Length: 221
Length: 299
Image 1: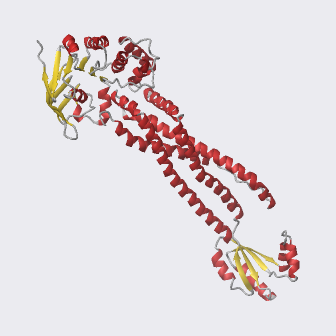
Image 2: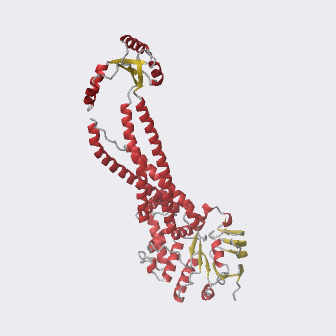
């Protein structure tokens, strides 16, 4: 599903965020990406939906070489990848429902089908009934769950979350993690970047450790 | 196809919502006022061109004889004029008849009485088959007893030439203001893009194509231009109505019912379409430039 081969990423200015990263992730896997802040976790995740392009090496996602992808093809790649960010990136001038239904506006679904999918996604994250609320009225955990609903409403094959529990209390963090596990259990490939040891301990079947831009498999006892 | 239509409808509705914002309405007003200048100029010129067309008859030349011209000279000149193949008709106007006509002009009776003697010469009114006045004037000037030859259509030709220059000025004004209005729309849409930058970034992250993101801004530019065009038409309409109200007594004093006719439906549609295209062009240029800056991952 995802394959990195000798991938390096250097930013303008000389910072090398990733060195010679080689690994692959099979469809349906649950993978945690751990490491300190600034270690290169976010860069690694951003390479998958082509938010960043590799400087050298090859990133293959769903059979497509991301580095060689034309700009016009990137949106179609991203529709197959659900993205969840630490800062949620919600639109606060729209309702909860409008945030969730947004990815369906351009993917060719009829309004009825879009509404059905949006409600189903909200139901999965426990926000059904809050459709008309403004995201600003939601708690931090609820906002993160809303971001997850938006990420999964298009039924992506891959779900990527960058520090999804960073600003949440333990209970909310656990609830968010349970949602990701639920998606993993129905066959979605899930990548979660986190420095939350508790989550990794509890759910981490496979862990990629990123240190100073170098990626290694963490062998867990 | 259904999806495409639905997305265009969404973009149009979104553009309408954005149009209600103050900056957009202000731009509509600016576009309207600026476009009313060339549009108004065009409407005035259309009126003047009508007048020029109506008073430019078939080519006509007046041949004035000297006051001392002998009867033989008059006969010889008449014969020469009639023999000319370019001449359609010749009418002799005796000096007494010319004086009588002049005396009928308001205010001239006193002037003629003060003169005592008739100062006007005999004359021929010559209608030509084709507008070739210059060559004919040169020949007629050399006929016996001829003092002066005047091509009566020359002033109409000058009016037509002046109208042509004025038309050119109007088009130049339209081009310059059009370019200015593209810049106005460029800035307005650019501001909209900046204020929506976060939304655009989110849309790109969740897989929206550039076309989907650009479309509402194109519609906004188009609507802004179109509404500006309608404002311009309203200004021209009100301006011409006021002008006609003031001009009616003046025209009546010349025995005329002249009125500036205003813009035809075709002209009005052309102005509205021109304005809409200007808006679209400004939006297109702005969106192309600004949206590249809203690419996720780009600081």
